[in-house]
Image 1 (tube, rainbow, N blue to C red):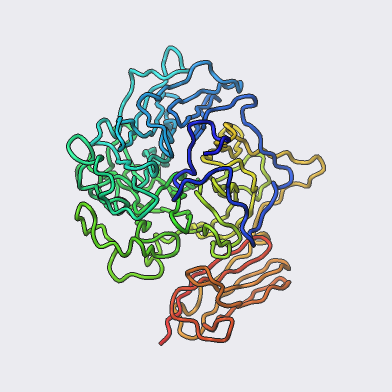
Image 2: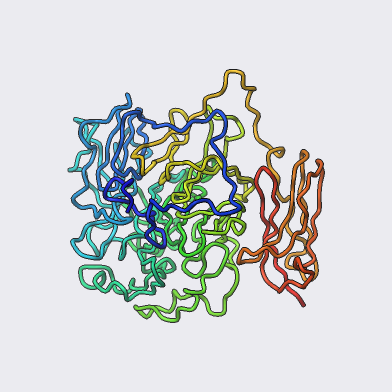
Length: 572
């Protein structure tokens, strides 16, 4: 790996292959790039303080900050911005720190001021080639609040290997820790499988058997679909005091300690980072509504995606689907090593993921920016972000979702409507120092992120020019979006969609197929005055031939981003 990494390195954070950092991909032809918006600066949040491979951080109520290093240290930055002389917590001995594995999850209890609990999620060093994951919490010491009281250790998941979550390779392991609006504990975990080839089990026999992972989980990436027998490839929702499942979870079976009773969402390859949308969820855990989760799922061969879980029980499709397409390499698997046929992809499925609930809200192609939704960028190793709630930024940023791409090194801001439909995006920067974790500073409202190569926690800060006009809140004038779905949809000979322009803009509409190929131009690019426009596609390609029956994307573009609608052509 590159000498730019503080050793040991965190390779491409669960990419499909190890990518030398000295050869990070350049922008692909056709990609849109942008400098930092006027008035914004990105700076070290703690000047003069650097960390060894920082991967997560959490702000304490009194102004101190905890920072997780991949090796197993949790460092403490004091309220004055200097680093405490001793680590808050040293978990280097039990942590397996290699490849994409290590201590990657950190969170502070929402009741920290009264209970002092800090939660960590790491891969356990078993001394063998196969491993498992552990969720544990510690209290800050009463006598010295700058260090953890190790005697308070409470293992919530993974006290022993059979009780842990399997990690059978160098990736797809522990992810984020978050708390719901109802104070339920939410954690993410990858499928624990291999990334270099199709993994249907049988490739890591040393990880299964007595004293290890149950052989029933020897099904590779299909663990993501196994609700009853595996916690891998899932978002789990837990009682923060016990680590057990909650009765309001979607697959509750009466046993709070079962895998099924802990599962909130499934079918995820590697939900490395996720967060909750502010203003969603119930405060009562009995309602089973912790809030709407925005999940950055790191892709395999072709796609990166952001998924939305507004309710429990959603299947996001992996490994049968990736991005907007079916995953034929896994669709063709007819047997797992453990002989579990129930987790295989449903026979006869082709084309798109049939469940609208599990269709990603946005996705990026690894190499073709025109195939991404929104178009214009490619991504590798998406880093799910956070929502800016207000503070010093211009008003149009309030409510925007900040999301990053670790390898491509960009940060976007995105708008979503109240139904979580994508509306608009803007490129914030393409020099983000490879973000691997986002968080909001509760004291300032600023977006902060872990810049793994720099060894810093970066702050996005706004410096309003002295002569700058008062910020204007964003609205329809900054968004060009579809105002209707295709009608009819599915269609046999034509479908029509509408959009509204609040001011004159350059706009165009293109039609793409599931492989990201341009099929037709439904509306040429030109400046259009304010008004309502209807676009009709007659199912013909650019050469005047009938397009085949199937799924297509109507992509509306403007200088301020784009919007996409899915249409289905079903010829008689």
